[in-house]
Image 1 (spheres, rainbow, N blue to C red):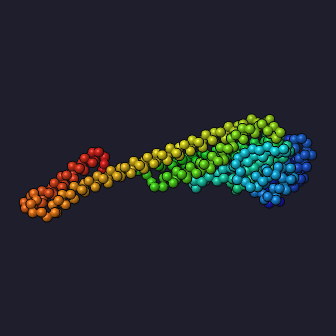
Image 2: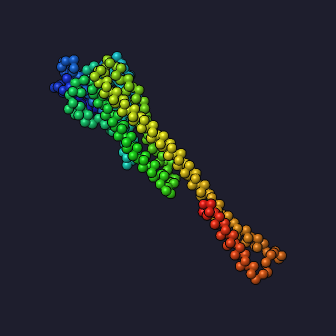
Length: 329
């Protein structure tokens, strides 16, 4: 049981109070401290048995416990009789690797407790408890203040990811449209970025509507924290706008690159056709004079051979000039 518990502490009026380390003892200490007391538990990848034990301790709904164990949940907010369940996806981005990493944070919110369940090593919540303990004026709002801080930290992580992605997309755009840069790997790179943008969209898109409705759950969310939660929803809406913009940009880049490749292929075909025409003229003349008929014009003239060579060169020069003028060569 201790393996999965990252932290367990009791608070009252925004300040940490003395309490046992075990769940039951911490909860009892928080309830004994008064109506503003609550306990904050942090769990990391608990097993089904471990979370079931915690669920019984805090009277969590079995369906919410099942969702928290299995992870891979769509971002959502669900209200049960004794608690509120919030599923969030966390994101990280490594610019050098051009990869978005995805984790999950589930939050159980009750009248006198808040519990976070993390899945995945890439979590933005490191240090959150210490920072929030330095702001007792916010922490005194109880579990609602913890929920706001978790959601705000997760959405801030989204903003960092979209900023990194946007910088890489600007670099990709400049590289693709650089003079003479039409590579065979370009379409693959664009699709790779579209997959990363899709990973971000799966995390941010479904979360906006639940975030906008959080302040309606007045049984669990205190009215004082409603403006803070609306501010988080506003930041999330901006992230969604950025993601939509990046997706449209990638589609435009892909279409432009396909047009660029098509133009390049047409240019190549014109050049091939022009050189083939230049080669066809002397080949045709040489073929005619290679048929070995006796009665052929200028066949027995001493100047016939240089005359034919001169004709070949003149025709090729004229064609070359015509093709150059029309930008075929």
